[in-house]
Length: 305
Image (cartoon, rainbow, N blue to C red; front, side):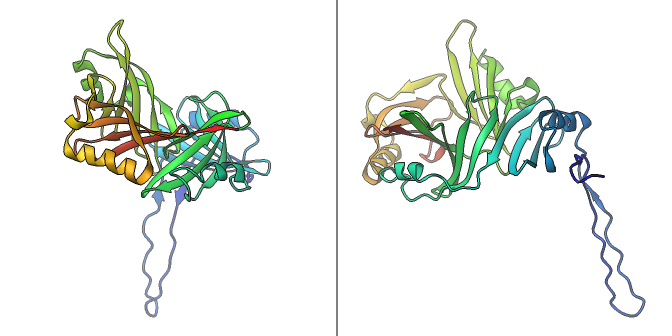
């Protein structure tokens, strides 16, 4: 089989012979056969990247998602796909993150973070234009920074790290999420699943009452509701907030210079959604659980030059 042929089945076998004594042999364990990559998925990949070489494909979630590392010419790529399409692909860039980007962080709360994994996002059903991506760790959590450079004004979007995302097909939505949506007489109208390095899902979806506003929902990998814009109560006086939420806001102002722009109490979770601002250059949207712990954050750094 030529080196460039697509490999749709991996067989890992361990063959070991241990001579403990004369004529004593310990038999190796049975080979472990990894799940097959369906032919339709292999064909989707081959049709999208007919010139790919050195391809390695792995099962992310049996029957639903796969990922591939491969080369096009001299460039290395990563792609995530389902049984219908390539969902996201990224080209690895050999150079470091440009100093022009690193310098933008000097006077922000992300000053000093180490940016790694510099890549170009070349395929995405969510974003219509190419973006650059870099990875970093902040407060022991993994994030990625995305941006489209080349304009006088743009945004560095800093979001929890994910490998790729999938469309919100009905059969992908866990039963407990479907039950919650149905119980509130809502109708799901789309969204995306974000898949991390542990192959766990996070669900960000939209739903509405017939003829009503569209509401946002975020669920974790178990289908537990983390945040929603549905049935929320606006914060009008921070003095009415629980002491631990007031303490969180005070710490964010003292340590990082963030002040509260607006916020909401989430009816279902007992948690809070806070929109914080640091001057005109940074904004931060955080979701807290009822105990004041962050369960999600999206940070934006505005660039004008």
